[in-house]
Length: 223
Image 1 (cartoon, rainbow, N blue to C red):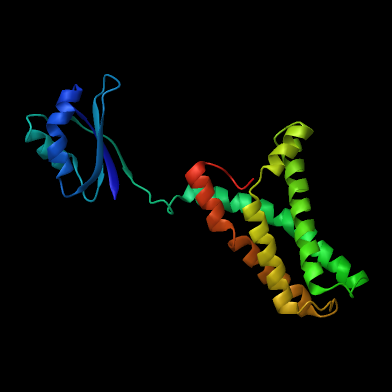
Image 2: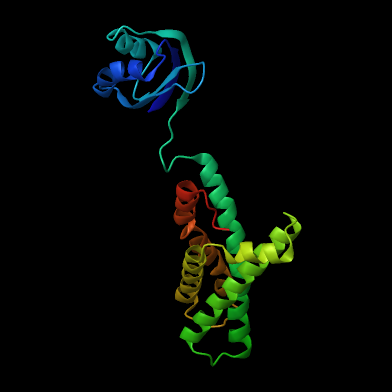
């Protein structure tokens, strides 16, 4: 699907109404609009296989025409096909992952090394809480030193992060880690440390579609 914009001799709302029926019934056109706001009266149409000649033939039915070829032509991106949005969502999710992982796994290591009697459920709960805290702390530091926010503004920005994204990430990471290791602290076993890789991967992938959707739908990053 692509979008084509051309200059026409349509010059008023009455002209637009005269061609409306023809464009509404055109098989190749999914949507169209005419910009009458400035001196260049342009027609913009989105559809499959549309060309300047095709738009001109529709205009000709009502006595109008394309008078200056195509002004702009671009591929119309689907909602989930915006590479720029995916790139930003990936970057934001990675920052969140780093912050969450520091507190999450740090708490797990601490509890399993010094308080191995702690129940599995309590370990998971404390790990999630710690991950949320370190994620907020990291974001505060990023906003303070990279973006030159005041400390208060940086903290408010960090607290305004999407908790849905962070909680989903935390639950995914912690659950994956415990499923692989069984909650056993085997620090000398390479498998215990290798379990971090799938845990981090699952933690990254789980909230990514939501972060993309939120960014695309509301122009809001996860943080």
